[in-house]
Every structure is written in C-alpha cells, then in structure tokens.
Image 1 (cartoon, rainbow, N blue to C red):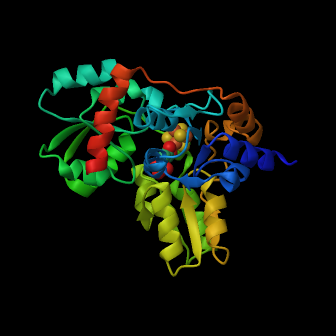
Image 2: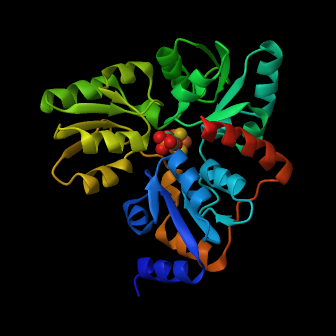
Length: 301
Ligand code: 13P
Ligand code: SF4
C-alpha cells in the first residue's frame, strides 16, 4: 500500500484531521484535509469538532496555536525540529522591556511567535488580518513584533506608528527576494502581475501589484483575469497556485526561496507521528489561557 494510502487509512481509524500550510511539500498538500494560511488553519483546527487528533503539517508556532485553541484534542507536529526562526526572534523579556519604555502602547504580536509571547500581548494578528487588527485599536502608537517588514507594511496602510520589537525581526526566506530579480522576470513576461508577501522588504513590496498573505495570493490569482504571475513568497505555494489555476503561469522571483523548516516534514514523518501518536504539542495551561485570550481577541476583529 502506498504511504499516502496508509496515512489516509490510519487517519480515518484514529479520527484525525490533517492540516497543511501552503508551504508544505506537494505530496503533503495533496493528502491534507485542508491547505491554507496560518489563520485559516487555526480556524479549521477550532472548527473540527469531531476530530480527536490534529496532525499539523507546518512549523512550531502554528501547531502551538492549534493546541492553545483545542485543549481537548491531541495536536501532533510531525517533525519537532520544524521551527520558524522568525518566531524565535521575539522573547518575553523583549516585550517587557518595550512595555516599560512605552507603557501606554498596546502590544500586538504576529502569530509567528512562541506561545509565551502571545500570552504577554494584547492581541495577535496574522499577515491576512494585521491591517484590520491595528485599525481596531484606539492607540496610534503600537508595539509590534517580531516582523519589522510586516510592521512597516501595516504602518503604511494605517498611518499609525508601529514600534518594531525586536528592532529588526525578519523572515530569512522572504529576505531573499530582490527587486532586480523582479525586473528580469518582468522583461521576460511583461504582462505578468507581481504578488508579494508582506514579510518581503519594502523595496520588494513596492515592485508588487498585490501584497497579501499566502491564501490571499491564491484567491487573487484565481479571481484575476491575468494569465501570468510573478510570485514573491516561499516556493511551496507554487504547487497550490498551479493546481488551482492549470491554465495560468507562475514564476517564483527567486528559485532558492525555500523555508528549510517548512520542508522538514515528510510523508514518512507524518505517518510515524500519526501511527505512534508522538510529538504531541503541549502548552502549559497558564500560558495557553492568556495566549487563547489574545487569539480570541484577534478572531473577534
Ligand atoms: P501566511 O499566514 O501568509 O500563510 O504566512 C505564514 C508564514 O509563515 C509566512 O512566512
Ligand atoms: Fe518562518 Fe519565514 Fe518559514 Fe514563514 S517562511 S515559517 S516566517 S521562516
């Protein structure tokens, strides 16, 4: 029996649901029950009333959010080493230091953070809803971490002052995109529409016709009448874009834009984690309770 069939069989037996991020390997996206961006997957994790196990094929912070939102379910991360380096860039100490310096400023953290930081903030956001979350706050000066590029993007969109914590948090994969590479692709495909993730640098975002989260990019590509697209996010998204739009063309701005952590999960690891019900993601209840409140405030917005 093929490994993917074994996973499907086991999944039914164990009442498991497989959630996969848009950057996962093609073979994993193909067997997943849901493929999406971080907020969609958090919502799905929340909605899956009948599932007993959530097999979260992504990186640490996404599975942690699922565990926080689903204290009664078993959340498994197929590869425990799949950790987002940007999420590691913000610490609780850093938040406390910033709060001391700007006591009146609310703290907003991107979901790409550890649970302990979510527990310390006023509200969370994702790249799909960051603008709305910031607009929902009365304050004009806001502490925001860990992605400095997302902070800049949201500041441009809302006119509010976002103070980045730490001073220079970033995604190493999205920093690989350069405007020069867009220029070359534009010369080859002059009609192409450029899509960029808000984690890209401001120079890169300026070259884009559309800036949005991974799922917003997918929606945009589907609804657009354009046939050619230049893509500024992790390469895994190409699988979904091509699958959903077989008559359209997609070019990655830089072929090496691979998030090594997202690629650590393989079908093999997924199968073993499910079979042995191992790599259970647990968040201490005291932290989870506060982090859940920050996530719930985001869902209300
Ligand atoms: P999305 O929420 O847009 O999927 O982004 C998550 C992420 O890790 C981007 O690098
Ligand atoms: Fe983290 Fe960047 Fe990988 Fe997204 S692409 S999981 S932000 S390192």
